[in-house]
Image (cartoon, each protein chain N blue to C red):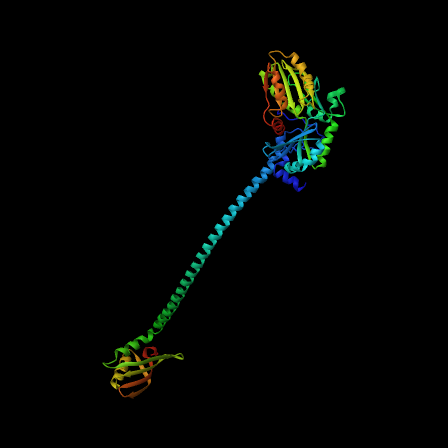
Length: 288
Length: 185
């Protein structure tokens, strides 16, 4: 037993999950500790400095490759984050798909991380990392598949600058699944005919829910708001099936995003609820 | 169940979920015992100070009592000495009881103007029945001496080896007195 172990017991640090424990929420891992959140998109990186109360202290963004931006910003991140732990949101080279009848055996949260083949079977691709979100009432599941090489690149880049990834997630997937969890716990919303649109830094996710069933899902990353054709290609199938009773739920990482300004006005004939609030992504990642 | 953001990083082996909450009793106990020890130390320290103050007070009290005792002992010593002196006087008075009639007789035999300048009586340890008397009388003559000897004879004391020296207006007399009743008949 080292002195540090005794100190950790006496400061109650030994009773907290370790900073990179995936089964614990961020605020349990970093109580009264500052941390840095980084969202990596294609050709763009934005970050937030969270204070000890896990509130956003400062934000920043830069265009360019993550490796270059990490090299430029690592000192600031290292100085701010305690012990060099950072939270990363990967917003590129991923796909979210709708799956059915995936195994939900006890401990599936660990299994999808350590042995995804046992859950995904033939759908498993060894070059991917996976995350799952199950519908509570149906056999549907949302499956996130992210390029393993992307994850390893991020981890290597952080390690080269003495930073450590406490968590690597997909911000869009986290925002979407959090919203779906809220809808599932709200009986009134669960019964509605919904089209859920989530947007995060050029990544778009759309899900159609009818009678509590997830019917269709489309997801694209690296989609600039100016690319009307691509965006229309994602949205069109949902708009075709929408009727007067269909409600749109829109959620983005920040209010006033380019997507919000450009496309929401075009959906005026539908009932749209914009759930976006300030620092939505950072607050979500800091709380959960 | 609380929502937890999904994690897809490469897991480090042996990631700890933290010690069970039950073991929080250990640091809590440690702090409780430490706190108790601090309070106990404060209590014992204040008790020690209090006892030291009491001890100083009682030491002063003992010193004062000792001084008082010494004073009393000195007084007692003086009283004892006085008592011893008184006892000696009493003893002397008791021891001089046999010669008191002689002294009283001589004193009563003095005529007007005659004064006893000196009166000594010494008993010979070898012959306790013999008492050597030296008497010096001022303002007296032979009549006075004869009167005194008559009075001594009246109380059964006989004089032997009497010597007298007549000076002007004074007389010195020496003799050995023997009590007649002490002599076997």
